[in-house]
Image 1 (cartoon, rainbow, N blue to C red):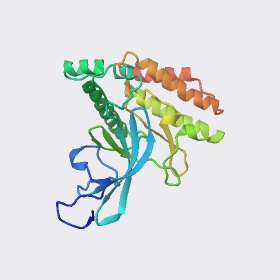
Image 2: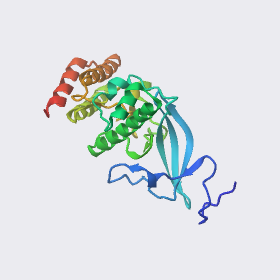
Image 3: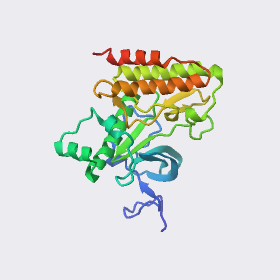
Image 4: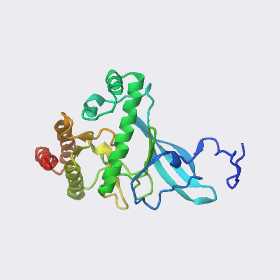
Length: 275
């Protein structure tokens, strides 16, 4: 099928494998938005393929561009939570404690893991991640900007390294030892601010931290669907302690010794300071 990018014919459709921008039917990220966000309703979203696959979601690269302005494309990460028959939410019961839904029918369906209940859980994961990213972005924390949420798909800022390619996970890198104190201070400050808000990442590890920026010295924390209310969730302190231990042990193995027990104590003090 041929496609005239400049045609005004409303019957025209994007080329195969592409779609019109879903901006008009989505929940949008916080304002003021970064300049690179394209809210044009006439834009096209082109799927560039999968970036990575996880237990709960696949992440694709999507390029959004407006016909007639091909020199202004924006590449984003599209996190797509899997359908109920393919979804595997690990340890989801523990993470979901403290979250609430309005209807008892929905609560029962989620507890029984019916098809309907699993769809509700998927929606909760997506909404929780989008809402968390929006709040953290507004707080100035180093997270990807959440562009939009539609159903169980989140469009996010694509985090890059100095070469313009996908930023590597911290676990995949070998930073020089002299850089470790600076990197640890970044993650410590991030975790303290997060704890002050009453939250724990819930699955924080070097696999969920990207080493980004022109000098590969900026940490960006990703993967937020399992965010935990440290006080509202009865297992909250356990998740917080695990986050502290996992990150502390990674830095210690790399040659910068961290007392993760002391880190956990500081985080708990921050989490309970508002009570």
